[in-house]
Amino acid sequence: MFIVAALIRRSLDAWVWVLAALITTMVFPVLIIQHHHYLFIYAPAVAWLCAQVAVELEPGIWNVLKAATATRCLILLATFSIFLPGLLMFIRTSLLDTYDQDIGEVIEQHTSPDEKLVVWGQSWGSPFLRAHRQGLSGGFNLSDNASFNDPAKIQHLKQLGFTKIVLINPSPFMVAVSTAQGGEVDNPKDLRQVLPAIAKDWPVTFETPQILIVQIP
Image (cartoon, rainbow, N blue to C red; front, side, top):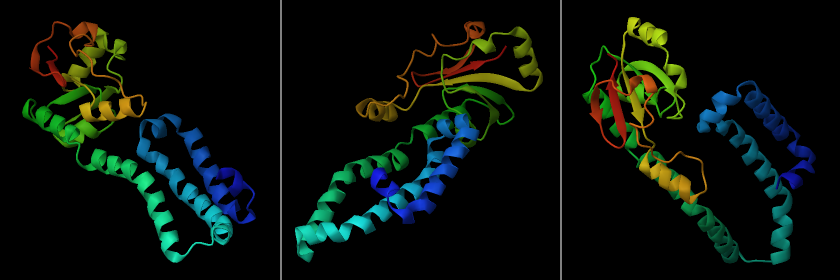
């Protein structure tokens, strides 16, 4: 599709959009890669290029097939059916997987509104927004917490009002979907085992296989 689009002079504006999206990605690579929805900056350009190719090739295709209106509708229906499972999976993942909301409710139940949290396993603001709590993200990777093992850093966090650390395993549904599609979502871990070394003996406030909340002493 892209090769055909590159040969169409009218597609120049769409390619300029692709270039702009690439430049944006190069300026903010970590931000965009960690937030998959930001990749939608490419979506309008890809749709535009697809439309250009369709406008260029579709008349010739129909002339070759010499298909009646009913046949054309069947072809379009079959094409749509191929992509329907992926669309339904996207809708189900987006709307029916309540894991993030459930985790947010657990955090809200086992912390107080004035507490600040350090969270591993979910990046950026999701757990804080859903739990109505303040804090910072230690990182998306549960095992990437070596920098936390600094008593001076712990003391500074306590002075800033941080009282708990929270480790969150990924959604079981997202793990299953990622595994089926060959994705890279981390498998669930034994949260006790991936606690920062300095926190191994800290009091546990709440624990399930999905979430571990530990008090900063």
